[in-house]
Length: 500
Image (cartoon, rainbow, N blue to C red; front, side, top):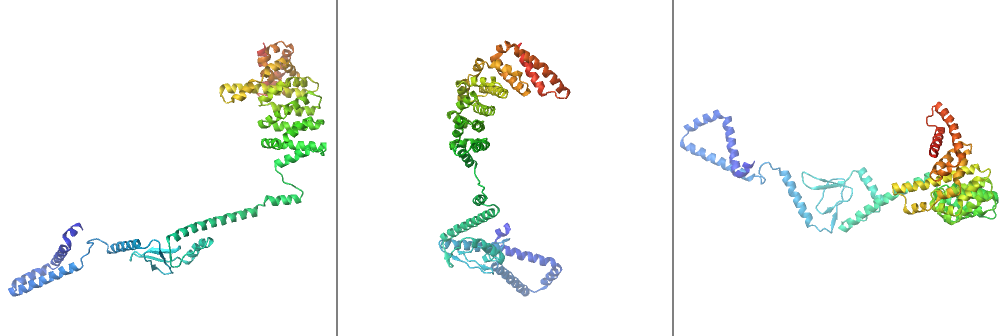
């Protein structure tokens, strides 16, 4: 192909004629020999005439080649070149159009040629005719066209001039299309909300129906306010006040509810209930306070500021029924645990003397075990806080400083708690003995000399050692290698070893 282009159209034509003559020569070789022999026999006049005929034939071939020559030469598709030429013309024509004014094309169900610069309505079917190179437009199939129009009908109608529209109109149309999509999504949301409303009834309707049934729906906060008002009302009977406190204790177990009790002054109302002359009111008021204080620092601080500690110690120091003292001791334990400032105030107010009197009173063995448990918790709590600060540095400096200001161990030694705790080993219950043995071990560093000077403690430990050896042997016989009595026996053996 490259050689043909180099020769040019005229030489290509000569080459074609030469090849044709060769083919004719191969096909009629025999005839040529006969013709050659005949030509040799022709006279000179005939030979001249034959030469003229051949010259005319070559001239006519030359003229034919010139009239049918291809500007793109060999192996060029005339259809493709014509398509490119049409596209170039359309591009030039579109560039010459005014960009602000466009003519709207109205398609039908038949294919129509689209002129340059015409705007096609949305939903039309556009194709490129490869034969002619022109773009053609028609309406889509009826069902598809209707489905496309549904989206337009759901949104706002698009007002378009039937003749022309500008580029600003196009931008406005796009914005309206987006608005239509938003309207459609909002309609879907409304439909979904309507479905939810059909499945679930609104709270206002439920409240109205419950009111008709004399049933009122209340939040925890509303219930606590109502209970505090009933308890604080002078018109409420003793039974109603006790019932209000009993119900209130259930709600203040939750930390958030206990803190909400502060927001409307309910905690102080309950603290003031400790001053009541009715033992039941004191008992259940302390019951509510113990539940609210438990692991709730915010409530604990408010209770100290509200004078709860002093009121609790007064009840424990005076003659009160045993159930009331149980609940008050429960409230005191909840207030002191994990609150070093309250522990300082407890020591300043003579709390150890109050507890000593409580333990030494007759018929208070149950309270004695609880007191010993409280002392063990306070001693080990301070010990663990100091060890944690030395090992991990996670304890805050303020809290560690507060714990160091709690001089609990010297106070226990001064108030005679070494001997009091040792004598509690005489209690018959195994659980009580376990708690007393734990407290003896926690006080060992402070009370070691006192323990050694107490002969009754040594006799009690030896007696308990023999008793629990027998019980541990029974456990071992039953297949329990690490039984409960074996653990108690280990505590007794360890304590005896330290006291030798």
